[in-house]
Length: 325
Image (cartoon, rainbow, N blue to C red; front, side, top):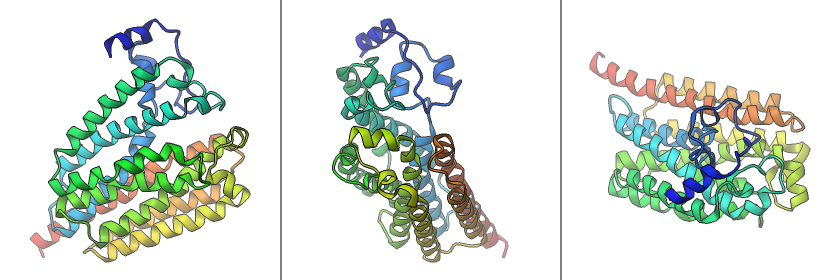
């Protein structure tokens, strides 16, 4: 890949993509030769990695409580963090390779590295392989059952970029792909997939479906012109209803997952804070304000962290109460 990196270094400077935070570390500090690849992996926009990571951390914390551990396994939390960055980057690279022609016709995506020509398709494929190898190394560090569970997700990840061409609900497929971590944490602790993990997974699918609908409203007009589909186009002005229903389902499924485990006050408090955050998004939604849609989408990281902190505090509190009844 070194030759490709050298080629990138000689290429004209790539303009920042529209939804990257201004002054992000890639634009300010990364070497020019690496910058297109870091943008290809979305390292200038880490929100996707956070959103992919949240179900992994929820599942790890929920399993820790069910297994009566003193705290969520730090090794698992770190491995999932590394894996989320690697596999989110790999997924985005694969998406950009497949969507390069479409991306050139959409204002928000026309400066993506492959669409703009800053990274060639062969170079992007090589970078994709590298990121997948990092993800594989993380996966092989997990128990065998979790390895098999992780491998089972690859088909969904591979087909997701094609779904916008054939269905009006590609967000549902993304929900499955981005929620797989809700199974992984539990599988890593118990070497099985039980009802609490399945309920957490179902709730996460509804969560992803909703927040990616918000995200899709940024491209609604361009998508209609290009001819790709999304829930933003499907629901239109009724999107707030779809979001309210999806977020309600999310909270119900999560509550059922907590009921299936020995969850206490802090876990339920975390869920209440999470739910309040979600329904505040619905209250504030204006589908004709792209900047607001992006901000609401990004705020789901904070919502996810609220739930994770609640689950984690609950694990610690229950352990301490067992030591000092």
